[in-house]
Length: 386
Ligand SMILES: [Zn+2]
Image (cartoon, rainbow, N blue to C red; front, side, top):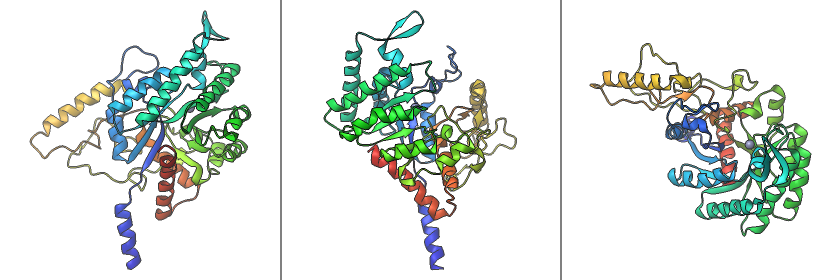
């Protein structure tokens, strides 16, 4: 009896807390623009996205910058949404050609732009300013991506990975790294190892990890944390590797609006319908539609609509609420009348699914063990990006 009471008390007070370490809020999809189309499909809905995240205790987020402009813009975004998230500052390997190399006709040469030093100085000053204001918690995304050499060549990536790491030698503080590494493990390690050995680099996370077990072990040996998202969990091979990441080195992320977990992925079978321990039930109030016009998401209590139907859904909600005007105040945080998820656009509220998959891969099924696991993963990120 005593045991049961204790258990009930704990379950009533414990709530999952998530830290989504990879959110691309600068992506135009959060402004309503998709696939390069100049016409928005919906207005900017970042506030809705943040509200949905908070409903499910995604209490912390790191928004990732990929260019110098984004790094600068994120300072303003962090100021605007105070205490909602922090940012990184850095130039992504896929962006280094565009940022630092001379363009001739339609392609980039291997020649550095004449203003490369000024650009790096600008990045350094953003890093210092962001660090001092508390908005920038990591240096990145920097690294190597050999899967997408059409954006930046190997030579360009290697050169600018080094030149960016050199910035760390010139600043007076230590800041964790937010690293991007795809199909480039040996070169990645060769470049970064000397900076670890001389104390320039203290810690960091290799995010969106999709490598082999051997690569995983090499990165763990260097002391790095490993960030896991939907892209890290696509295939059965991915799942085997993901299950080998020690809990004390694990971080979770969505990489939103990218890297969603699709029905065709090997990991999808591990996601349970809402509500569950990863997504505790939220009151729906009194408003229930007998025959809703819009369907809820399969695993979350929000409508999931095609971007083309955004306006239609808004009008439908407005009309239903007007019909109900005489009744009790409407509860529309969840349910068919709540603000919609956009189909195939990932967002921070979904990060709990990554946690659930990782729990199941680690054979963690007991409630108290799940709680410990979720707390531990949250604390890993809090500790590094404090
Ligand atoms: Zn990345």
